[in-house]
Length: 292
Image 1: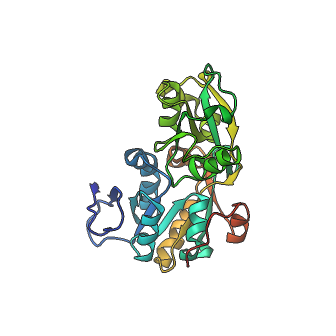
Image 2: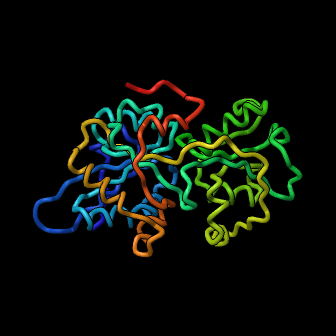
Image 3: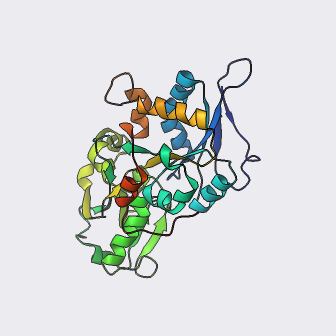
């Protein structure tokens, strides 16, 4: 049974929430609240992660509530108030809020191509005549959500390193997933967009479904690489339930036919454990001091 959970339990979290209930009679089993960042399309998040959370429920008896915070500040408040237990997040979010997480619970996302790094790429129409960032002065550029490392944090640094102020020199807007941004560029709704490199590398069928011809897009710049997302539990989260969740996630591998329907929609190959020192060492330059 799937029901829409009200926001009363999460007053500080401006997000949509689904309670993926077990539908079984009797006393409820363990429950965890999982926040997913970055994302702007709540419906798409539900579609992508429903097979995974349903698998967790069936395999472990844990009921998972999905939440999609609109900002890092909302996520921070929810963690401090124990409204969220586990977070799947980009590296700059973890770096900023690292003091709120149990460092023994980190699981690193392995991307579908087997790597643990990500970059943002700036794309334009191939017939636009634009070949470098400097030509975007005064033009419309669509970035991803501000909770995205690849499509906002790293991209903003890339533009500024090239002498373009995101605030003054270009017409910047935020919002949208890679599909939306690529489509907007293809339709000439914007002059350029920032998308994840994995989207161009491994989503040919999705691009065709959207009517986006890869050949109409040109990559003119690439951000510095950052690690892929990391999953972490907050200090004080239900320890037994978190441990069961971790074991269930570590057993999954999208390269195994039986696991592919569970993980492939999330664009995750598998999870692996990682020490915080190893993970943060790859997040440079450091963006802010961690919250304690």
